[in-house]
Picture (tube, helix red, strand yellow):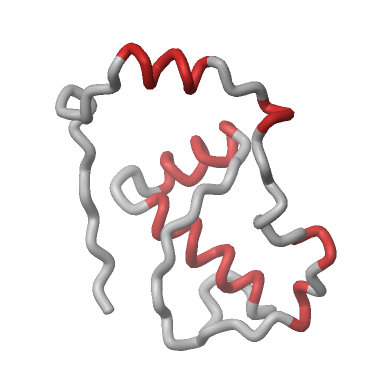
Length: 99
């Protein structure tokens, strides 16, 4: 399955009514219900079955700025792909580049 890339146009985003903006601004962090999100702190990661078929899933992960800068210097156009490869190699117990 090929990875499909899409770019969002920051100038073409849907309009948010002033009423909707007020509602969103009025939500406090403590009012957000996180109960349906699984607790990943209790996952036994070494026992997780990794999918070797190579399906790509887009996720958001906070990464230190200097780490992203290092990967970007190595490969400005493909740094995200390379970060994913390094993470996959680590998760599968391989040294980087070993197949």
